[in-house]
Length: 186
Image (cartoon, rainbow, N blue to C red; front, side, top):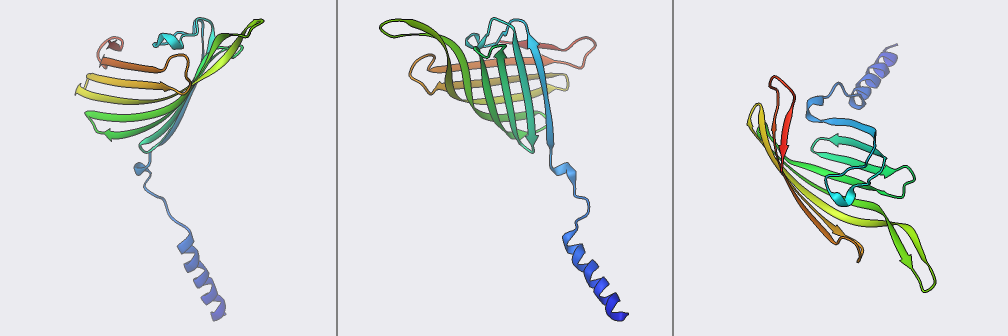
C-alpha cells in the first residue's frame, strides 16, 4: 500500500511539471476581424485601382502582438479586373499619443490589355505584380483630435505598365464629440 501511495504521489509530481496553470493573457494581443462587401462602382482612392463596375470587396485582419497580416481583395464578378494585396505590418511604436507602423506587401492587379500579333488582336486579362512598402505615423494631439501621415510606395515587377507609385496621405480626425465622426484628409 505504501508503494502505491508513493507511485501516485510521484505521478502527480511529474504531471505537475507537464501541466501549466493560467498564463497572463494581457501580454499577447491576438485578434481576427474582417468584412465582405459589395460596391456598385469599385472606386479606389488611387485611380489606377478603380474598377468602374460592381465588385466584391473583402478585407481581413489577423494580429498577434505587434505583427499583423491583412489580405485586401477586390474583384469584379468575372475576375477580369481587380486586385489582391497581402499586407504584412509591424507596429514599431505603439504608445498612448504616438504610433509608428511599417508595412510591406506583394500586390497583384488584374487589368484588361490588348495583345496583337501579325494577324489579329485579342483582349486578355493580365496580372501586374508589385512590391510595396508603407510608413504610417499617428499623433494624438488631444483626446478628441489626432493627425496622421502615411507614405506608400509601390514598385512594379514587370517592365510595362506603371513602374513606380508614390502616395502621401495627410489626415486629421476629430471624434467623440456631440455629432458624427469628422475626418479630413489631403
